[in-house]
Image (tube, rainbow, N blue to C red; front, side, top):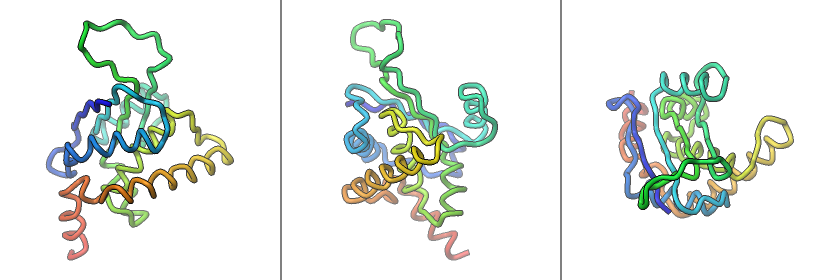
Length: 172
């Protein structure tokens, strides 16, 4: 599986992922979520302002959100020239939301961002969190997936600068 990666948040504030490790993580996240993506996943990390705009224009909600997912597998997509990649799903992830929520819940930045990827992939697998019972079921599934991924990856090292950032905050 190929992962198309894009990083557009405020460059000096949030640590970027280790790209090689992130691609391996994305492949494993696809496997453990059983979302069925087989050829190409697009993951775009965006700034808070971009995420608010995407949330408003693409989803019809106001405010900052953590992840937005789009599953294109059933969409009638135009044909591309031979050899060009077509994403089966697109995740838009917001590092600013991960930083804010991670601090509130005392969860490391890298783990919080990894959770957002898992959450988005579970949506592409058909999970829903809009009703209380479905939300509980999705949270259990998130925990199962995250437990398995944490056995395979040091999620703080997935975003290497986040360890330095966390240590600096703890000293302050």
